[in-house]
Image 1: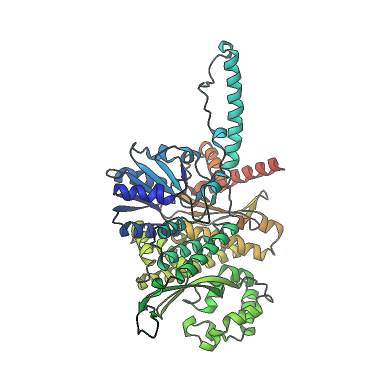
Image 2: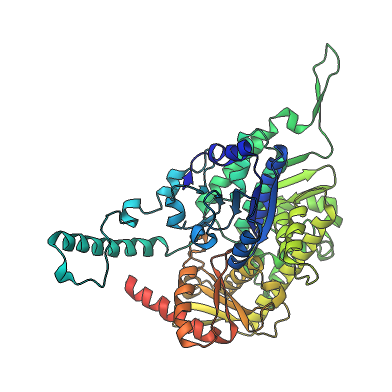
Length: 588
C-alpha cells in the first residue's frame, strides 16, 4: 500500500505504541544517510531501534528471522520494494512492514496489499503517490476478481455457456495482464533519494537542520556520480535542496545564538565556530582536487581524462598544453592543491572558464554544494560522497562488512575528521585503480563487440585490483568509465555510443564466481532506465539448462549487477547477445 502522509501513517503509530523498530538497511550511501536521519528522529522521541545492514536477499531473510521476535514494526531502507516482501519474509499477522526504497518498478503485490505493507514515497512539493500510480497498471488490469476459478485441466465439454464465456474472458484478461507486466517490468530505474523522504519527515516534525540537509545532499551527489537518477528528477532534487538550504539559512537559531547588547542596540547574532554552512556555488568539475593535486585530479576525473585522452602520449601533451595556456607551472599543479600559490588558486575558476570552449570541455565548471565548518573544514559534497562510499567499499579484509558500514556511517559526522580523510585516501586509491584498469583495457584491446548489439569486457582472474572492483559502486564506476573512455578514442562513432557495455570480473570472495555489470549506451545513459535485470534473469534461466553448476543471484543494491559463474562468462554473453538481437528484430 502506498501511503500519502508519512507522518500520519508511519511515524505517529510508532510514537503512539512506543514499540521498538527493526531497521534493515541496504549497503549504499543513500541508505546510510537515510538511516542516520531516522536514527536522529527516533532518538529525539526516545524510540528504541535496532539497525541491521543488509547486502543480499539471503541476508535480508536471515536477519529478519533472527531479529523479528519483539518487533511489531519493521522498516526496510532501499530494500524490498521490487520483490514480494510478504512471500519472502512471511511476517506474523501483527507485524507492520514499512518500505522506503528508491528501486523501481515496485512489486505490484506490495502496492496492492491492503494492510501491514506500507510504501513510503511522498515528499512535500516534490513527489506524491499519484506520481507513482501513474506508472503502475490499474488494479482491475492485474487481478481477476471473478468468483469463478479457472482451471486448465477441465473438460470444456462439461462447462455451461456461462462458464465458457467467463473462461474466455479470463484467457483474454491473462494475455493482456502478461503484456502489461512485461512492459511494466522491462526496465529498472531509481526514484527520488530515500534520505529526502526522512528529511521531509524531520521538517514536518520540526527537527530539520543543516546537518540533516547535508546528509541528503551527499546521497544525491552519489547518485549523480553513478548516473542513477534521471536528469529531470535530478533537477527537481537540486531545486528542493537549494530551497531547503535557503530556508534553513534564514532561521536565525540555526545559524548561531543571539546575544543581547543594550537597549539602544539590537541583539547581535553570533555564529558558532562548529556550525555547518552550506553553499551552492560554481566549482571546478574535478574529483577530489582540494584534497589532491590539480594535475592528478585532471588525470583521474572521467570528464577531463576522456576529454584529453590522457591514456595516450598525445593526450598527455594536450593536458600539459592546457595547463601552460592557463599560466599554471607544472610544479605548482603537481603539488597538493592547498600548497599552491594563493594567487593561482584564486583565479582558477576564471582561467578554466576562459579555456573550456577551446578544449571542448563545456562542463568544466559546474554548480556544486560546498560545506564548511569552522576555518579548516571545507569539502565538496561530491568529494565527501566519494569518500564515504570508499569507506563502505573498502578492500580491507581485516574489517567485516558491518564494520565498514558503520565506518561509512560515522564518516558522515564532521567530528570524525580522521575517518573523513581515511575515506578520501581510499577514494584516491579507487580512482587510481579505475584509471589504471581502463588503460589496460584500452591498450590490450579487451573491449569487444558481439553481433553488433553490445560491447563486453572480461577482466582476467589475475587482475590485482579485483578486490576493489567487486563492490557495486566501484564496479559501476569502472564500467561507465570504460565505455566513456572507449567512446572518446573511437571518435564517438555511432557504434561506440549506441551500444551498451557489459563488464565481467572475477569475484575474489567466491572461488569460481564472477560479477557482471551492465551500463546503457552513452546515448541513453542519462535516461537512467536499464533493461539488464530482466535480461540477466532471462539469460540465466537458459544457462541453467546449458551449463552444469551455473549460478545466478541478483544484486539488491544495483539492478544492473548480478553474481554469476565466471567460467561460463563467454556462454552467458553469447546468450545475452542473442536475446538483445532478437528483441532488436522484434522492435523493428
